[in-house]
Image (cartoon, rainbow, N blue to C red; front, side):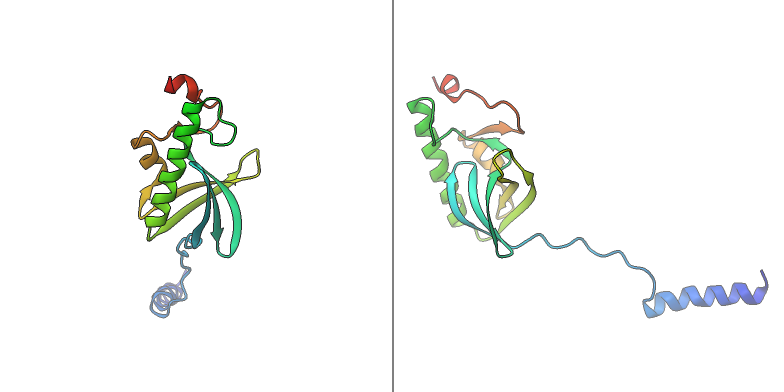
Length: 145
C-alpha cells in the first residue's frame, strides 16, 4: 500500500465521522404506549397498546382465583387482590408493559409496571399474591387455612 493510499483511507475515515456517514447503532424502540382498559382479576387485565386491545396475564406473581375459587377464603382474598390492582392502576400516571409471548389460554404475558414500580413486587409485598413463574400453582385454600 502506498503512502497516498494510506492518506486517502485516513481522509475517508475522518470524513465519515465528520459528515455522519458512518454506520450507527439504532437505539432500542420505545415500548408500546399502553393503557389498562379493564381489570379481570388480581393478575389479569385488558390492555390497549398502540391501539390494539388484548387480554394480558400479568407475570411474576399469582393471586387467588375469583372465578371458581376452591374455598370462601380464596374468593375473599381474590376480590381483595382485584380491588387493590384496580386501585393501583387508577392511581398510576405511567404504565409500562413488557409484552412477552402467550399462555395456554391465549393471553399475552406481560410484566406490568406502574409509575416505575413492578406490580408483581407490590402485590407480593402486600400479601395479596405469591411469586409465580409458571407451572403448578399453589393451593390457596391450604395456604389460607
